[in-house]
Length: 514
Image 1 (cartoon, rainbow, N blue to C red):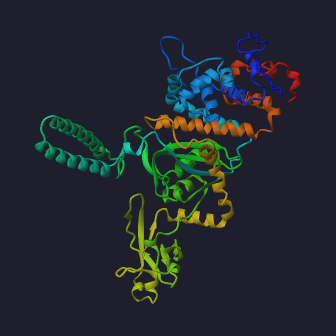
Image 2: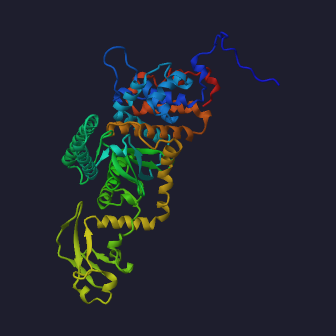
Image 3: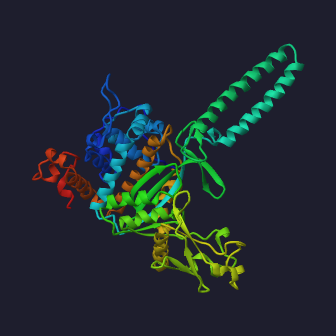
């Protein structure tokens, strides 16, 4: 049986094609090239990596390499270094440049702000393509594991356990030392010295935790100092960061991201301010889950004039009445008299004292009618004061949200399908469930920024009509960037035919009728 035969490896061959001919015209690597070429990287704040010695690599080449890598599920600087040697698409993209892994890694680490600006440009490009509706957005967070093991994360209780264990071992070693002799005695002394060194280490960590006044339960991560030990889901915990994101409903594109090490309670207000600035209006509706249900954040949303739909959490067991019909939400508030009316028709009033909680103030409403009320046992378990209703300065804003959720149940049900789509793509399909960088939240945010940028670009490229419109997209990118950045106007003559703009090679322009 005959088979196809390969060429002789020792046969000399004269290639008659150039490097550009080896990459098809419909390859998305050309889109990456044109997207980066159209950016003013100097104004965006990209830094050159060398100030002396041989010339540094241009930031555009390293940015192209990273965008290509992230779009093809490659984030490791060593892996990208290998691709520069063997991947024809990367060789074409970088024009046969071969940066080493240290150069590649430093570029990502030192340009977190500039990477964010490039991401913002991708959002502007999507808006110009009419890929962002700006009418409905959804916000959510996801946990991304940090480059810091649980073993290297400490809190006060964990350090205390280590110190107690070391003291116990030292006591055992000292007892053994008193009975030992010869070489065995020397081994025990070395073990005692080792334990003492460990104790100094944990004492230093304990002192740093004692000096940390930023939270009630301070933590210390030794590998990635800004990462925190958090609950991921259920009882599963990881040392990780929290990625806050905002997704537009029209095509599920990211419009914003922010990397934090905090939970969701105080995140909604900040993300809404940024969304208003990005979309340049406040006429959109924002969907969030119950983790964002915080009174102060509703106040910020109302101040911004943004309509929010945030899932209403269930009332805690300790706050519920024996009979749910007598829960506080069934008490009617009258703003004019500043009083509540209970389901039995009794009026609850306040002495106007403002009580302070951790993040808000509140007033208490009571009535003497509770003493003789026939349904007291169904309404409250209090033996002294009877039913007490609390009202904070944010209660009105919370109630407005509840009314909106009840009136728009079908709209709120879209939230999960919108905001979880990018997370599913990034974490499940791409495998980006952790951050590659360490040594601080700034470097980690650069990694997240490249993830969000790669997701947006890949989705925008796929959302176009098809590969037949590839060059239309390429030219549109250039035109849009010309409109966005007036500084580009000096590089081109607006009257020049786009086929003559020397940004990409078209062997026969008459073939492409656009």
